[in-house]
Image 1 (tube, rainbow, N blue to C red):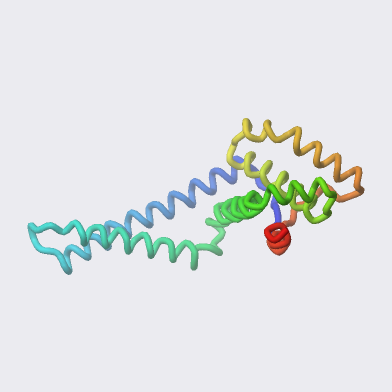
Image 2 (cartoon, rainbow, N blue to C red; image 1 turned 180 degrees about the horizontal axis):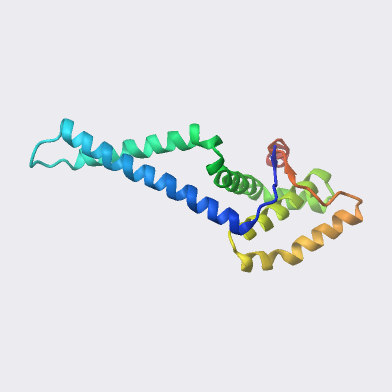
Length: 173
């Protein structure tokens, strides 16, 4: 279950820049260290050590990924980036079945209506966090029309939760 959280866009961007810088510096340090170590242990003085340099960089990529997806994933300094990643992943999973969702919204399917409302709210938040006001402006009419439809049906318009278990029904229909 993914839930939208209130975020200050300016603070979010500052925190994600900081976490990106931390991960980038870690990767650079690991890449340089592992490449140098590989050349020192396996290379030839004055010879072509390109493959050892590439191997060191490749190992740095794998270690950096393992650290980010492992122990760093739950660290407070990475939380905004993790939230942004999860938000975009949730939105993409809805985008992949959007044609079915919109068909079912036309048929007044309550689950489809909730999924589309979550999608609109999530997309609006993503545009705010990314400072993409032009893309957000293009959505306003569609979002308001869908919100009005939900109100007419007596549904709660604050659909801030998304359950990925809702999507298989759209993939098979």
